Amino acid sequence: MRLDRKLFAPAALLLAPGALLLSLACQPRPAAPIYGPWEEGLTLVFENPSLPQPQRSEDRLQLRVARSPLTPGAPKVVQLDLASTRGHMSLLARHQDGGVAIVGEDGRELALVLPAGFPAQGAWAGPGIECRVIGRAAWTGASILPATSDPVGVWIEARLAQGLRRRTLYLPDLGEVEAQEERDGGWITVNRLVARGFMDLPAPKRP
Image (cartoon, rainbow, N blue to C red; front, side, top):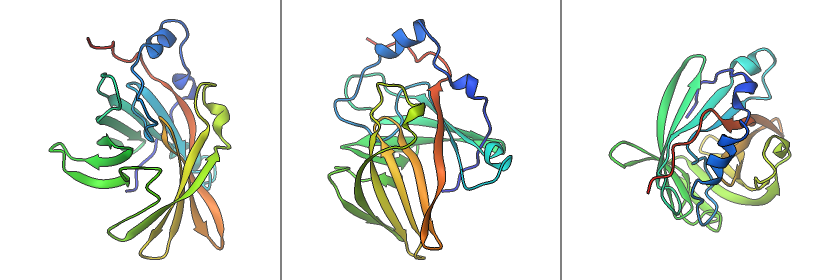
């Protein structure tokens, strides 16, 4: 799925001190790594480094976790709001047994992102696509993350029916942070996380 992108001021994504940090500390944490964004209010900004400026900045994509169950344990369905200069859209992402899927309002699976059992599940396939886990690696762009974030993620490789290969690095609590495409015998980064923060205070923990 190709998504439009939008430029957002990096200053708006900086973590506010004091009350914000205390509120984040009170949020329930999943028992096992979740390879996707799930914390309410979490805002991620991506850009395509292969594009020239100013197009690279103009085509940025913002992803924000608009709604997430504030209950102990792993989140089930979270609402993701995406915005760009050309518009915006919302998606529902379901987390289950390590897997991530995009679902409809009725709960029907629309697209599989990661399979149940990930990353132990080393290979899977869907219509016109085959995927496999390559291995773990530390993300080279982890300097933008807080010190408490885990910089080690899992690379997967997807091969499309047309022969195109794409590699994606997933980090705990963030999901995709970098994607590469094979071009002319080399790997070119076409999507990269460039900013992470909270746009507003997460909702208070429910009893």
